[in-house]
Amino acid sequence: MNGTATIAVALRSLRVNALRSALTMLGIIIGVAAVITMVAVGAGAQDRVAAQIESLGANLIIIFNGSASSGGARMGAGSNRSLTESDAEALRGIDAIEAAAPNVGKNLQMVNGNLNWSSTTQGTTPDYLVAREWAVAAGRSFGPEEVRSAAKVVLLGGTVAENLFPDSDALGASVRLNKVPFTVIGLLAEKGQNAGGQDQDDIALIPISTAKKRVFGRQRGRPDSVSVIMVKVREAERMAEAEEQVNEMLRVRHRIGPGQTDDFTVRNLSEIMATREASSRILSILLAAVASVSLLVGGIGIMNIMLVSVTERTREIGLRMAVGARRRDILVQFLVEAVTLSLIGGLIGIALGMGASVAIARLADWPVLIQSSSLVIAFVFAGAVGIFFGFYPARKAAQLDPIDALRYE
Image (cartoon, rainbow, N blue to C red; front, top):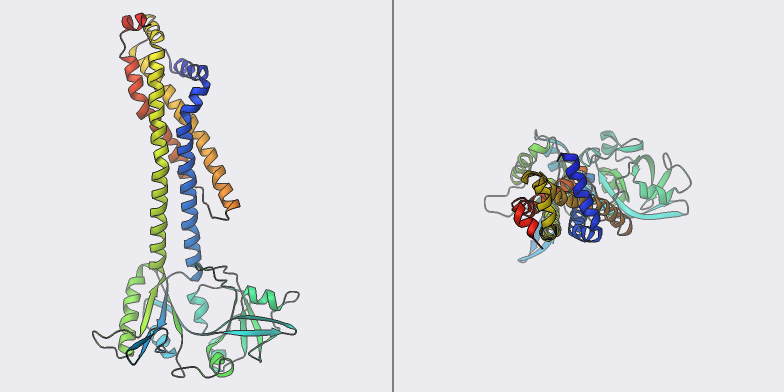
């Protein structure tokens, strides 16, 4: 019996018991669909986390002020205004660091004519856009000379520009920040939400000198103190090296001795992203493992039905052997039936899994990412389940004695 005839006989046998064949495939269908859906949801979640953190800026280290103490009571993170503009200037001298941007921020009411909008205003330097990898969509950024002269110029984020200039071009227009008139010299490219759900485009950037001298008023701490320093590392491979050098330099500059607590906090966003990706990956593996149980159950169902089929068709097997079919032909025939059940179930499961993934994306507004590799793996795994669980019934059929099989009632 050639391969084509074997497959034809196997398919005909499955069609004879179409309902039983469909119920047998159910476990494989559910298993494959669940695996595809869970992997797609997990991959989509990883992709969203990566995109949100990367929107903050790649290879980014953020340095915060530490905690101050008063009468033995610690006042909380950021209460010790220890970071300064000169710290940022010194950090730029580290070889691994590309940019270091000092920051001061405050929520201000911005006004354009009879329109107003409350938003975060950041006083910073041109290095801020480098550190955050933030492009200027229209116009230009302010330069070092405008920082030195405390120029009244501003860059607007998309959300601010949309609310203050809904029907006109913001570029070149005048806005008032805390009653001080500013000229809009640039519009920032859209960043979207960050990992915490905050709108990153709801922002205005002005020179740090302008913020301190003309807008924010007297700040707590030293005149050159800042809230945050954002550091851009040249290469991802040098993040650990740069973080260590930042800690060493700031400890020296702030005269912090061995064993003393730092008056600053360093956050490495790459580590945060790696942790979130690892958590998301573990969750995906867990969900896929749970879904794989359905494949195992489906495989056991295939073995059970194939054993029943061997028993029901014992006389047929004996007759085939009597007219010349070899044991190998019988083995292949039953194995093809088992694999066919698995592969058809796998194809249906893939279709259902893709449909479920799309439905989740639309109804739950949850990111999904269907990867072609997961589809191929699920299909191959379904076939492997058919071979593994179908081999024993097929071998049992092939080992039957022709005489005993013909006598079977």
